Image (tube, rainbow, N blue to C red; front, side, top):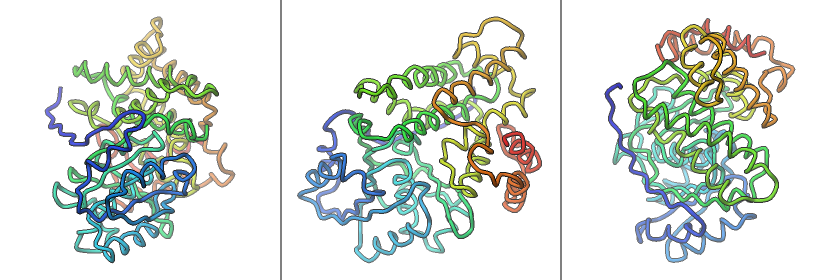
Length: 387
């Protein structure tokens, strides 16, 4: 097991009716900015619950944060924060809203052009960012319990990430009731996103960190078993709770400790979202199978372990089980009606691989993956295999 440090200061308030408790988590004299997306919280009852909980606080609102939070929109929010002397941020939404709030937390006190935070990977340390909390309305990214975020910039077709130990939410509310009003497409995206998050931390090489391996596998199995229940039609509170907690546990930092991780799938997937506007989770499903096939020799032992422990495939050689593992992964995505080829999302896919290679080269991303050996040329070939 590799050396590691682990600290996760986010307080979780899990369950029905927990939004009412946020007034006790925010300083009485705070000037709060409530940040949300397209307004769905005004239709599912969450907005009213939040306003009631903040009745004794001074707060303002900023809505309209889009999926794949856009830099231009967030700069408008940043100006508002400075104008109103906001002292606490409250993100009410899914990963995009929470990610956007993390960027605003980092940018408020940053001395320089805010895009530098992402372009130069400037980390935000404890005490540097504006304090914030979150109320999760769309399980998927785990942003409610981690310190990373991803921001898009339309004018440059870039989607970049940053983070730091100062960007954990102080608290996050996870009420499974919100799943009741989430469209099926977004639930499917959440399941796919969380599943792939686990794979990025697991599908590398076999590890002596047995507990980490088993926790990761348990999350994968739970997502597989929860998927048909949460998509079953009638609302199932327990299935919704399992879905929500799986998404959080998939990327709260726990399963990546003591092991090596990959994240090349995300690097390539982000490019597809930036170029074509494809949902983030679906770009991961496009890239992951090709990534594992391209890197089959270095990952085959772990792929075989995945096939055996997660899918119960006992017979065959390492190579045979590994190939079946990739097949089962694709079948799982297809069972969610997720396409796994880029050409199924856009007719303009030709030239995308060269575009990714060029972008990675210009950013000096010359070594990705668990061994930092995956080159821009490798990325080009993986994307080509994903057509």
